[in-house]
Image (cartoon, rainbow, N blue to C red; front, side, top):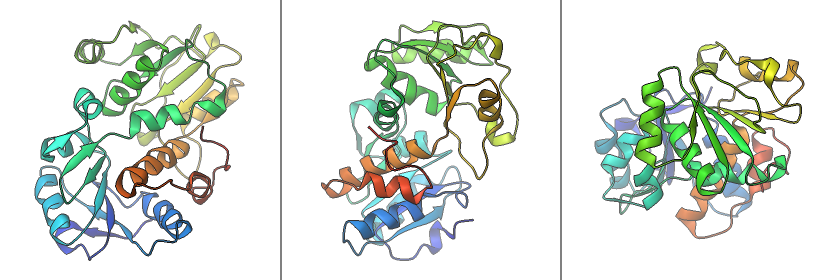
Length: 276
């Protein structure tokens, strides 16, 4: 469990991750390792912010001298609303996960960071990808994938939400009535099923033999989705390389210096070559 502070009691520091809950976050450990490797005497802490309090919390942290904040579940849409400006991709997907606090500028490093993790998987552009879910993470992943030339198939338990995602983002994705993995080289679970210890009812008998199962969640043990994928003979990947990739891009955006990606990965218990 990560030590965290309530936002009104936050100490003076340089960077923070805000969320609710936030005690599970590996970001402080990861960023501490990266900042040390960069030779910078800067600090990074975890701060709990209840829903509805993101704007005053960010203003408070800025007043304490914080230079930046990462925003995790469930604050990415609220963070966008709290920013004075945001880049086009963040506005398109309706989510900010990285903020420059002195100016309240926002960006989204989740989509580009996700693409960074695909290189080592040998996932050529033009491959078909099944995205499970239609929440904030799905929006960033789906938009980044289509922009990069991948072919999308989307499934969500509530079809109307998947239809809204396609319409609002202007995607050319196929909508699936059932989570059908046939013909897909990559299956990305963005749902909260793994968070609750449940499993998506995928037809594992139709998976491609060379497919990769990718769960954006991570924990001390493999998620139910990844356990089932492994039993089906698929390669698997959890959300730690994505955490490292989006964290590297956040540091580079804040500091204007190359982040030590290998250090970020190793701090999370990953191999040092899991980022492109």
